[in-house]
Length: 486
Ligand SMILES: Nc1ncnc2c1ncn2[C@@H]1O[C@H](COP(=O)(O)OP(=O)(O)OP(=O)(O)O)[C@@H](O)[C@H]1O
Ligand SMILES: [Mg+2]
Image (tube, rainbow, N blue to C red; front, side, top):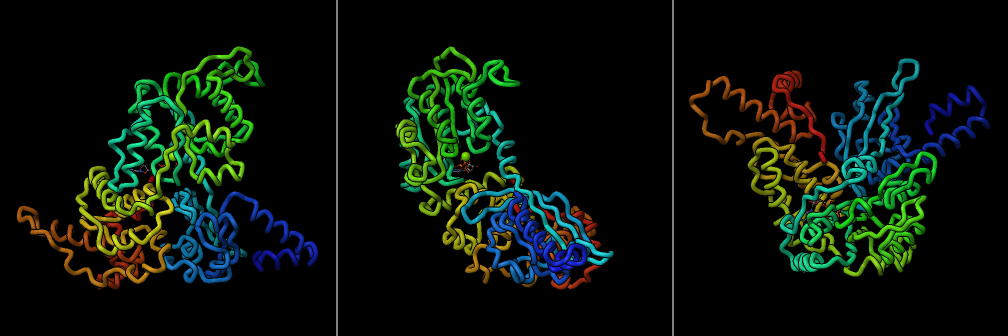
């Protein structure tokens, strides 16, 4: 707790009272679902709660009582919103950021950063990160996603022996209606496989209904799966559940290991009897639904920690498809890279051809906790930072990824000069003035990116004043782009 707050409480309530309040505030800080990070007037971190530590994948000991610039190697006055709040009295509201934590989980936050005043003096700055991962996921997946499936086996990219074997097994599963259990870490392509199996099966013309079991509270899940009869409970109406909506097709139950055991038992009963009863209904109804379930952890762990019932596991896993993590099939890296570069070239109308050798080396040593999704996000993020370069370089990679690899920090320093940027033959039909401006804009954008928006440093490299650079940033309408876009 900050000394300032403690001091003020001392004045108001005396020592014992303030101690108790401090303990209460500390409890609150650890209980809230928001990440909280506070720096004092010298830029030293004085509050860094558990949630923030999870979001940013930083140990409290790495951050607390240290200067922000020491704790976060890529923070500088211009790209740290906390320091901007402190030095420039700047409030940054509602900035969306996406991170991968140590477990490879993708986390999306909405951040608010602002200075803290006491008697018109700035005494520190606070950053509050609201974890909106679940909400994002619900919006993205659609609460009750139905119908449109995009993926077929043709969309699954990979040359390694491992992935080819998995694809073959999955294709075989397309010929039957047996239950399938897909096991794979986050971002390995479980949804891709589930849709591909459905689309290659005789059920392809019937609905594919997908539900992430972790995204819905237990209390709602039962009625969402099985439906309700009017009057079953207050506010209940006659509504079909996902099983009925998927009739004749496939129901994909993602993260089935997060269903509570009682619901898992009900699910098992439905799978065995092939009939179901809406909540509050007395009549049983026959159903014809293929179940594809997915879990993102080792089934043995899930069973031994009671996250999945053994009987349900055997029932679901008639066919089990285990998708290996990317770090175990690095041979797929280049094919996947080419695939995603191609995808974003089309989307962004760019002409990127490859990644630099440094980036390649880094990709081969990195362990990819977020798997293929992480790779795709990194390529998309990097291509957002490029102007007309054709090669993705190390400094194009999002800062959170560079930060993760101490080992690679030596190759993060950007080139010192901007010479050699002008490579195109000038088009003589254009006015000299326009051409000059185009080149100037190009040089400025490069310098800004290479210096991670440290305007003073970029100005020094360009050999112009900071004011002059700032004027040009406005003139050419150059904006900062966030690290990752979904
Ligand atoms: N082999 C692959 N080829 C091409 N794209 C892939 C491959 N594997 C995954 N992807 C892409 O990676 C992203 C993540 O895939 P998907 O949503 O299927 O992963 P997931 O295993 O369901 O992840 P999560 O457990 O986090 O839900 C998608 O954009 C998907 O298209
Ligand atoms: Mg998924």
